[in-house]
Amino acid sequence: MLPAAPALPVDLDVRGDRYTLRRATRHDLPALVAMTAADSLRRDDDSSDPEHFARYERGFEAIDADPANTLVAVDDAAGRFVGTMQLTIIPGISRGGAFRMQIEAVRVADDLRGRGVGSAMISWAVDEARASGVALVQLTSDARRVDAHRFYERLGFAASHVGFKLFTSA
Image (cartoon, rainbow, N blue to C red; front, side):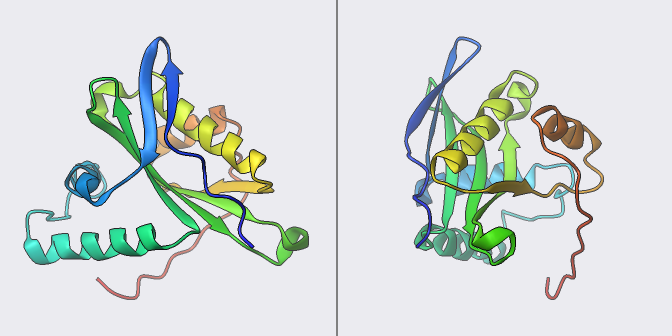
């Protein structure tokens, strides 16, 4: 049996500003796609192409239907979509059958970077993992994201493994 899904929605106070973390809905998909497509390493994504957008829709539906996955949307006090991350609970045999939480696709609006929003998001996710009995929180970051690596190290993550990827389709 999987550990409990993160408790959402939740309000976070970040340096006096309020942010709401909630489960992303289909309504959030255009903002999620725009934030992903604006990423400096992903500018080749053409989210305006209907067929390309349909792939995002299929991905969202699969994530939303899977109890091991939580796609988090972050709103500011005015209701503006300002961040996202995907949390996945992974069962395992190693580490005595421990569960892991994988944090992926962390994004924060450009105008909020460096203001504590990302730190609050990750800290909340780690707290949720601990509360549900997850033994290990892990994430990956593109090797070119040197600033992100410093950010994760400041939060206590260690660059303990080397990752490999093999792309099998477009």
